[in-house]
Every structure is written in C-alpha cells, then in structure tokens.
Image (cartoon, rainbow, N blue to C red; front, top):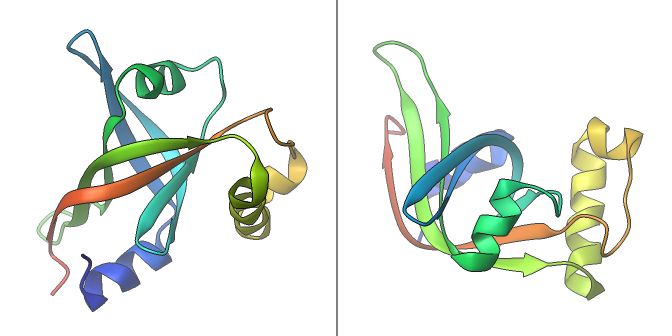
Length: 130
C-alpha cells in the first residue's frame, strides 16, 4: 500500500494526529505512533474519548506530517482500528514502544492497563514526499 518514500517518511516520524468520531462529532488529538508491517500503532488510555470512540466506531484517520510553509509533507491514512489489550501481539507492540519512547520507559504499563490501537489502512493520500 505504501511506496518507498512514504515508508521512509513514516519510519522517521513519531508524532501524528488521530481522528475518531461518535454521533457525528469528530475528535482529533496528537499522539505518538509507530509504523510496523504496514499498520499504524498508537497507544491510548481506557478513559479517553479516543478509546470510547474506537469501541463504537472503528473507522479512524491519522495524519502524519511536517508543516513547513511551501514545503508541506504529509500522509493521511484512513482505516479500520483494532484494539489490542493483551497477548503476544500486545507484548510485541509494547517492546517496540518501550525501545522507541522515553515516556514509556518512565511510566511503563502492563497488559490490560492501556490498549494499543492498530490502524489497518484501507486508503491513504500523501503529498510533498517526492
């Protein structure tokens, strides 16, 4: 789904904005993410609007970008989101986040304490990545 330039861009970034919705009300927030095996991984807490929205509506969008006037680079991804709370997949994702992000090492968590959102893309558009 992603071309080489997009993959390189996603592998170098770690911040994004995720969009979810409930009752036709959109909700956007900044998040840290990891690009792995053509999916986007985000962690959230159980008591967030994002988590509640994804449980009700798994259709999610995420934007990864660098805004520089006249030289904007971005990928906008739409997809279905799976909630990963425990098990081998959770452990794999947690290990990656633990290695990548200092904030995870400072405030670690265990299975069933904070879920991962696994965004499986079904559509994407990018610009400025030539």
